Length: 146
Figure (cartoon, rainbow, N blue to C red):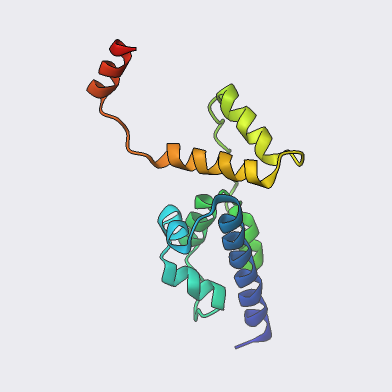
């Protein structure tokens, strides 16, 4: 293995490790959850972290990993020593955000808000995001009763 290849492996492993640490710290995602959301298997992610790959990672997997974590793939490409030859896609314009969601996001980044309160905000959001959707007829019955 050449020195350049080894340096690239270390750089990419560091990038992946930091991305995983960030996902665990800010989103409380396990390795399984990261794999599910990125579409990259845990085995592949673990090989990347160990620098245990004979040929370069597939670009599509790197992009999928980054996009699933909300990261710019260019940072991963830079760690791998790749030059991005294609033009950058224009970022889609996000839909307008609900003012209540904006308020929660501001609280999550506010240094004056305690870690305990931030934890409760994240747990509530996580609960609401992943709870099963109520069938339409159940919602209508509840609206009529209220």
